[in-house]
Image 1 (spheres, rainbow, N blue to C red):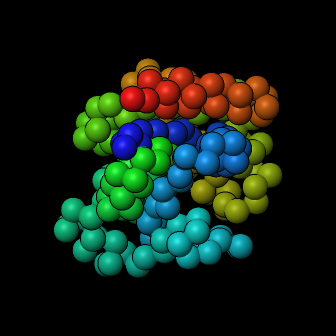
Image 2: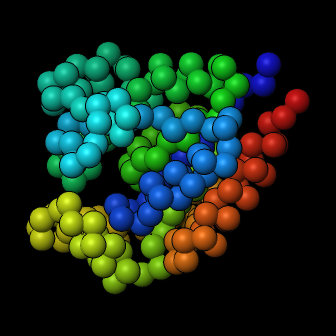
Length: 190
């Protein structure tokens, strides 16, 4: 049986990673989204085990100390991590696994899984990113400013990714991400 392929989709908060990945998942039944763990509070409508595994800081750090995360990082004051066991189970069953994570986590995955396919999702501009964050309406003014500062730093790491998708026009960006997925996924066919 074919072992699945690990895909990492990362970029600044508000760049549209989630929207692009959701469209990819609709098209490819062999792709699975890894559900990350986080210490941040759930946003309205988010459900445990669907969007995230919500943990308190102590539990998260205990699991991190026991090596339960493929990657983990503190981002915007909260901890985020990818449960290693979930990823390995899907890959062993032949599914491609998509990690929608931050740039720090992507850096760790590149070090630990060198053959992972990495995609950086970039907003068309800092102004467009700010507009998206404000339209989302889930962050305070201080949080928006922090995310914008982090976005500038994170964008400086895009050269470390195998692919870069500029999310300037949604349908075009979706098609580009799907083309990357098809090309990289089929390269592991036996």
